[in-house]
Image (cartoon, rainbow, N blue to C red; front, side, top):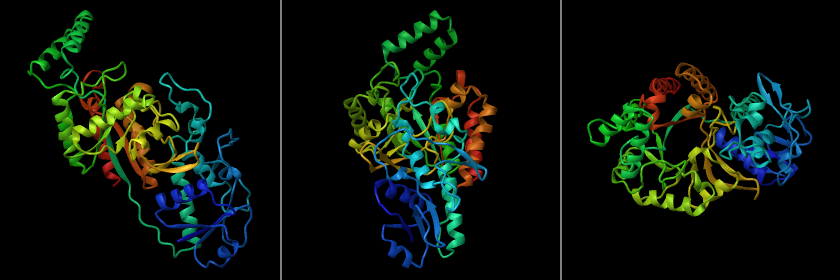
Length: 436
């Protein structure tokens, strides 16, 4: 057990010390505001205050964690030991910055509560983030800082037993469109066929006809391929199903489709399944509730996992809506336009509601790379994408974190604009496996 002295104990301090020491480093921590208790303690201890008492590990605190509410923060990022840091402190401190205040700023997504520019889908832009603007989006800074704290403790208090962490990979698959041609219904199929014909796209017209007539497999039906790949590398994927009414940005097959329902059940037999809340459900709670309950009814089990369609995430409303529907784990934390570490961490963590100043039980699982980001937003080739993915995996491996990838069923189909991309997924799985 590590004893931490701080003059005042509040929810922010409880949250961030538990995250750093328990969640990331795997050791227990006790907070005290009693100076005598701290001085008399003969075990591992940390002083988190404005001044040192003796030769203990002293991390000078900034006022940030003692604040309540949300306001603009003056943040200057500087280089430190080959990485980045902010919230600078005195040279007399063990570190020249406050890693706990800085970590809280990043994982709470403090900046996303502030007025800022959003994209056309009303999403916080990666380009607006502190991480992107200061060139550390590719780094899990919170893990890096935690590792430094661990090293300092190990030298000062060698009796502290830190558990051995291991790198892990969780592949996640979003099912936005279960089938390219099957199960779309008569009117949608006729309309799509006429559009193909009017554009002189006779190849697609013929493919649709052959699939509907059962003469060839649907190009998006890659589920056996994915299952076999994950089994080969002993991976445990999570599939997120868009289970919603048809809409401008929600174009999966009808939820009443028996083939679609059978697909969901068959995947749930071997993999974890979650809800992929529709585009409009982000601001229509009743719609979100219908989708969660609808998927639960198909599986005859509670739905506890979620990832927002289009990665639509509004703080704190999106997460509050999920909590109210008993969702326990969300996998939305990542950017559509850039790969990297949105919350600067590669371990799961509880959502802290800044408006209410409370730690919730909703567990957030940040992902680092998405297929659409590489292909559409960054416009990288498959070869360039493989290089970028390996760089991210290397960063996660350095801190023994969890690498979470976001892929789609159609992106391994070698179909249309995904030709050449199945090898990206294959090489990603293989490379991550070498790190385990």
